[in-house]
Image (cartoon, rainbow, N blue to C red; front, side, top):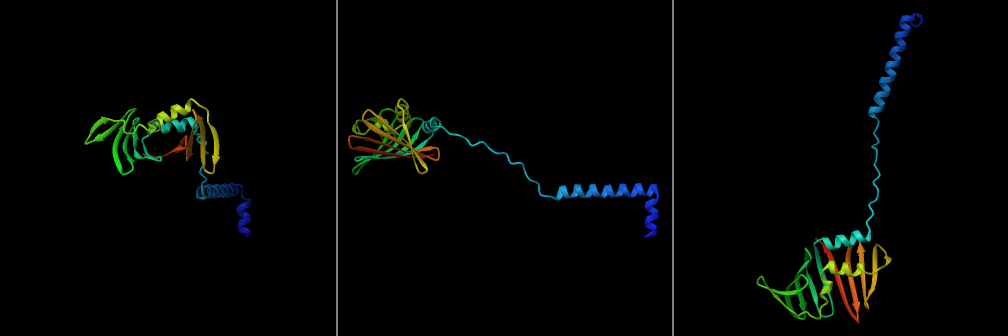
Length: 187
């Protein structure tokens, strides 16, 4: 212990010991900083707000799989580039059709203009027709659980547009006890 007091009282050794202790202190601090778990800076993303206009725009611009049921018809097919191609089943008869504003029967890749489906509301086949019609009217927003629905009363007909997960998933049309149910899957 006497030897330690002698070294401590010597100004040269005292300065070296203090310098060494400071060096050890900072080395330990740096080591603990490097070893300690790093907390990553979490960037809080702003929630993306999707408007009803955005949803309708996506609805008209995407390729869709359509399933439509009425009292007399069962329609399935694909809507792409503002045209519908698929099948229409009426009773036991199933026909391949193509619709781009006019209805065509498709037989061995030949399209023939037809009026077989004159009683079918073809204005419901293309999303662009539905959106342009409802855009000219104001809807009433109703929330139903996870779904949102917009109701429109247009010229005596009732349209209801159902939205789930920021996409239009279903449209119903009712007029004069005739009900159309259109369901969509995005491709």
